[in-house]
Length: 185
Image (cartoon, rainbow, N blue to C red; front, side):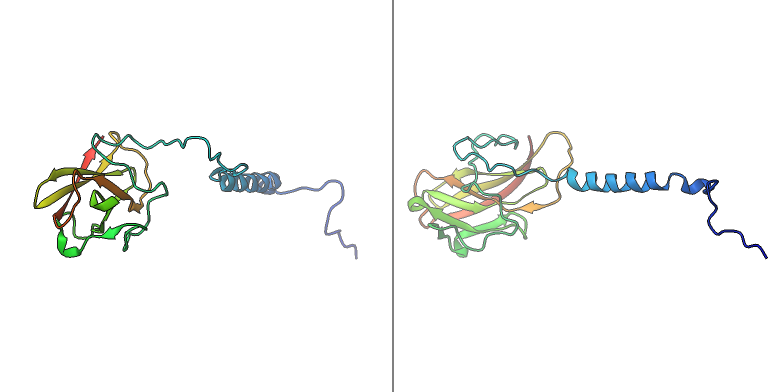
């Protein structure tokens, strides 16, 4: 009895679907590696502390005051004022002009002439704060979220930047009235 060899010699024949298997696997591995590395930034050198920071964020509307801190906005609303700030009592805050889940943390700094608030922004929005009224009985602060003029792809996160506004005279016992609005740049 003659038994044929399991693996034919020189005249090997592969099925048509397996002829490019190595090329397909190699291309898949290369594509996976390139996709995984595409979103990573290189951190070869730390930023130069003497150079001025650059920003690609939209300009603040007129009368707006930039955030009091240069760090990234918090992902959760603040529950205590920043170091050096004095919390304004809840009874002195009228938050009926903002959504129910909007942060209402308010504090004073610099002898009461600077009032800090926690704003809310998300996606492409940029938060700012404006003093819209200063009377003997109350101070009205409008929290503005400015959106870009054209729709864009944006992250779907909510941020809570700490903002500050300057008053003509110390807050004292005046009520702080918070309002919010959205604008398009």
